[in-house]
Length: 335
Image (tube, rainbow, N blue to C red; front, side, top):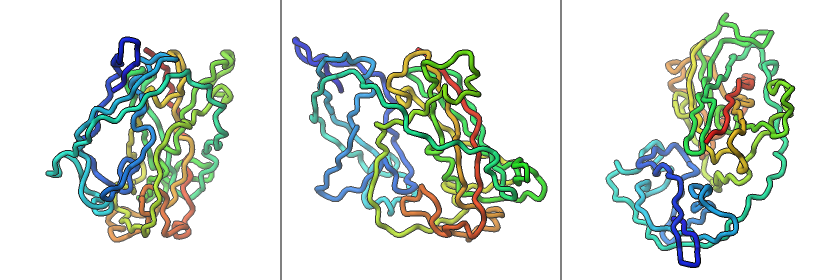
């Protein structure tokens, strides 16, 4: 809860409604949203009370008090994260919710957002010519809406297709194409880019042919979390759909990305145009065959799981699969 400090006392600030936390969650590894705590241990986090829902209702120069009223929380379990991998925690576990008492508060003064420096240099996006002839040919295609509002999130559909074999022209060929299993880590968020059209762009030039009209936005304030983990690498069967995909030639699997107003540049205004694109990727591990053939094949991932395959480190001598940039979804900010 947020209160504005006025001469007449505290005045509650009504924020933009947010979705409540989930009531159940399946653990697939060392998630950044989860922590292990020993008795008496204290968890310290930044941005737990970040006033995102109140931004549009705050006034620069005014002083505010952020107050934690208390809550009941269902996402917990006894034990360690490793003990609960591939298990669901939450309301269906039979445990009562944890009561987190209220009363904590802090005060601050609202100030104007400082101008952010130019975005950091970006890696060049991958082109079709970087594909390796003879390797599986994989492409990414995005679909999404043309508008985003301040209150709703947009869903961008990501279609990843195994098109066949890469020929000498770096295109797909169905000749002699066989089923494959791939490690799908390269289709995670790190390989996507969000770009904003510069306010001083040249309206005469075609924006698709003039990359200088677009600037990649890196959120320097985003804190995805970190941890020090010193546990053995984990053996994972390559038929595990949480980390691997079995694909036949021509087959597609689909993912979804969600973007909200607070994923955009802080000084975004109505009328700004953004585009979202799969930038470049490299499938670090893959093998010919299907699930039946590789029912007993295992590889090793780091103990936090969501990363590159560590054993075999060289994909057993097979070249990597280079995945070129996708099309982009362009959308405009509206009220």
